[in-house]
Image (cartoon, rainbow, N blue to C red; front, side, top):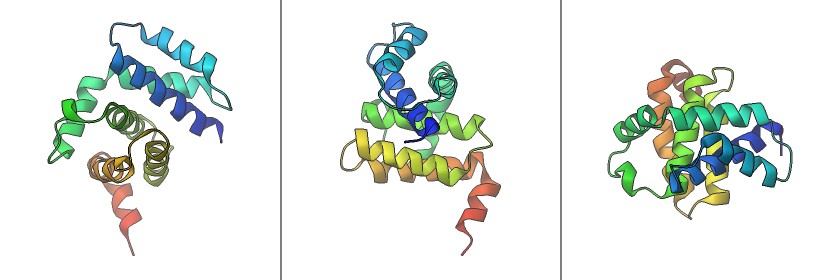
Length: 144
């Protein structure tokens, strides 16, 4: 596992913990997950993703709502919701990370932490979000 993949894994766990207990300090949640994390992780990238996504969750949730056709965000599985926030945030702020990488990493985390349906659900929503956030890049990756 690479350092950025580990950072995404840490960020997902932090966002999940904060979704369960939104009153806890985000920095404390990050420290707790980093202390338990086994493997490489870029702690600064984890911090950027986790704390940034948590701070922007209202805007991220609005974007996720607009991409979701049948699911209310409040009814989504916590893992899926946390993962969608994480990947949507990464798509928004990390222009150096290509869309396919963000989507592939999110699907892998969905396989690891989510339900059987999570990978397909997360991929479908993130594909719509990516087309909105990065239309040029999304179009070019669909070219046959």
